[in-house]
Amino acid sequence: MASASDQVAAAIAGELRLLDPSVRSSRALAAQLLDPEFVEVGASGRRWTYEEMLAALPGMRGAAQDGPRAEVSGMAGVLLAPGLVHLTYETAFGEERARRSSIWRREQGSSDWRLLYHQGTPVPRA
Image (cartoon, rainbow, N blue to C red; front, side, top):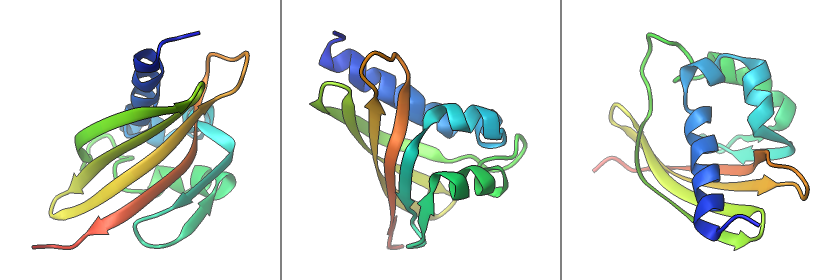
C-alpha cells in the first residue's frame, strides 16, 4: 500500500492535470481523470454530473492553449482513508478567485486516481 504522502501526491498530480488546457480540451483525457460517479458543485452554484462536465469542459475557461489559465495556490491534501484523498486549494482567473475542495478516489486493485467530487466557492472581492 502506498504511503499517505504518496496517495496525496497522486491526487494533487491528477488535480493539476485537470487544470492543464490539453486535458480540459480533450474529452478522452478528462474522462480518464473523472470518476463515473463524479459530481461537482461549481462556483456558480450549478451542480454538474460526469457527462455534463465532460461535455462542457472543453468550452470552459482554462481549456484554450492560448487562453487564460488558473493560478493555483495553497494546494494541500489529507488522506481520509486508503484510496480516498481530500484536496483544498485556491484558484484565480484574473481578479476572480475561488476556494476549491476535491475528493479523489482510487478503486481497490487499481492504480488510477479519479476525481469523485469537486466544489468551488467564490471568494468575495475585497
